[in-house]
Each structure stands twice: as structure tokens, then as C-alpha cells.
Image (tube, rainbow, N blue to C red; front, side):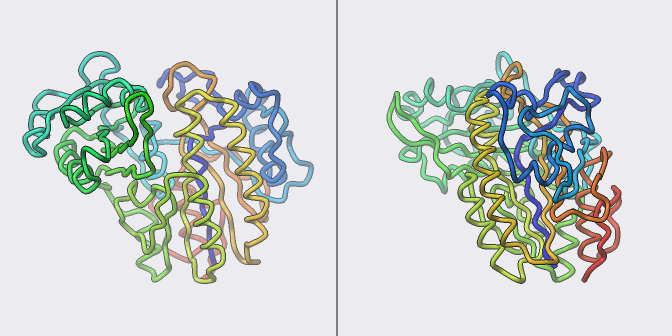
Length: 395
């Protein structure tokens, strides 16, 4: 028995009931980007029931070009996040069975971002000065401060609307081991402030032509309790993470990690795991939607990325074995037509292939229904939260 859990990073399907509390009333990633490009063509996910899932939320969440299927090949639903927050860590942790009643700390959008004592201690611990210290687009702040960084060797420190302490450094100025070591120091210092992630943001190139590399690493806040990954791996079942999830879960409960910082890399790893009869539980993240298109408010690029992913999935499902199950969902929204450049608080789609006995999975009250379903699939004791949409109980 194998279960593949695929997170399409930021592919939301309609504003959550509490979206207004986050400034996101009216957001709808899939519906709005589809309208912006004159409609989407996603035949594989449409056959699985993506249009049927959107219909559960009413006309405002309709996806132009992706109508409900008459007889879906998969089961369909939508999920509402219960944790406080709309960031990557919060969403993935809830998918794995956790719920954060208190969200991670965020920092001012204007003026200095992080408190002086934190930065002073970080500078003393790493032996380098600091420039930046504000909320900014990662590509923009590198273009602005990259030359000064190369001249002085100072860290470029910045944040975003998420709970992140980001450290940018040129790979020719700060070797990757030093950058990662600095992030480790920052992680320790940021824990008392409940910063969700410390992120290494290496780049290369010259002024006017800087480029971020795929050597990014995320250093996550310590997990507050055990996840379904821990339970599955402790039962002797292999757990493989693909994408950046080894960082998000700080390596816990993971048997094998196939780190990738692009959809192409994650897809290659997914295909490789599909060829392994002992793959067990495979948990993957496709990051490009969020990283390359959502935050940059590029609806055209986002739509093309969805089409490419849909084409990949049409081939991937042919690799599945008769008793395999594929679950497709997201971790939050990032409506590329919405104001600002931040994530959006949304319902996320839920597709299960092949179709289970109950085709319509409804509106799920918590991402942690995914973890509860994974426990069910592998015959493990129930998780503390959630209701399974899969009740297979196979060993």
C-alpha cells in the first residue's frame, strides 16, 4: 500500500470564512487567475473533480474553463484551515495533524522589522554586520543591496508578511556552509519570538544581474508535537518527503528526503518514487506556483505552471498501482490578482484518485483530515484531530 500526498503550493480555491480577519475577503486563487487568462484547461484535474470541488463553494469560486465533471475519476472536496495563520509551515503542519491555536509572529511592514537586540546578538554570533532589516520582496532587496553586500560582507536581512527571518548572501562572498551556519544561529535566537522560519536566500551574479539560486534552505520553528510522519515511520513504513518538506518538518519522522527547490525537481523525484514498490508514504510539495508566480502576481505564469503540472499528473497517474492512492491539495492561497504580494486565506481543493466509495468529500473542517486519512490508510491508531475521508485500514 502506497499513499502519495501532493501539495500544490498556494493553489487556493476561494476565500475562507475568516478571510476578512486576514485582509483577504474576496480572494480566490484558481477562479481569479483562470478569469485573468481567459480560462484554464486542466483536463486531468478536471476529470478528477476539480470543477466539482469549486462548485461546493458556490459561483464565486467557479474556475473558468474547468467545469464540474459528469462522472469524476476521483473524489473531490475542499478543506478549511483551522490553525491561526496562512503560511507554508502552518499549512503543512496542519496537513500532518497539528493545529496552531497561536500563530507565528509577524513583523512590521514599514520601518525596521526585527528588534535591535536580536540583530545585535546575531551579528556578534556570526561576525558580520547587517543591512536591510525591513519587509521587502526578495528579488528587489537583493538588487537594491546586493552591491553593498558584496563590498562589505554584511548580511542582507529582511522579512515578508509571513513569519520569516530571511538572510540573503552572495555565494562568492559567503560560502554556503557559513550561510547555513548563520541561519542555524538565527534559528536559535528567533525561537523565543516564535518566528516560523529562518530562510537562507543565496544568490549569484553581478550588480544589475543578480539571480537567486536553488540552494535555499528553510530552518523551521521546533515542532510542538508529533505528526503523522512520526507515527508512520515508527510503524516501519518508509516516509519520503519531496521538495522543501525536509526543512519544514526539521527532518522529523522522515526516512528519505529528496530535496528540490523547483517543480521540475519535485516531479522527477515523484516519478522515481512511483517506480519503488516499497515507497510507503510520499509527501511532496510543488513550490513554483507560490515562489515564482503567486508572490510576483503573475497570473499568466501561474496558469501556465498549472497546465504543465496537469500534463505531468496525466502521466503520473499511469504509474500508480491498483492499491495506491493519490491525494492532491494545497497549503494556503496566493491569489495573483489580489492586492499586495502576500498569501491569501482560502479554502484549498481536495482531490483523491482513484475515486473512493464516496465521491463527494464535502467541505472539510480542518486540513488535519489528511493526517487522519493517512493514519487510516496505514492501519495506525487515530490521530488526535480530524475525520478521515479515506477509511481503508490496510496494512
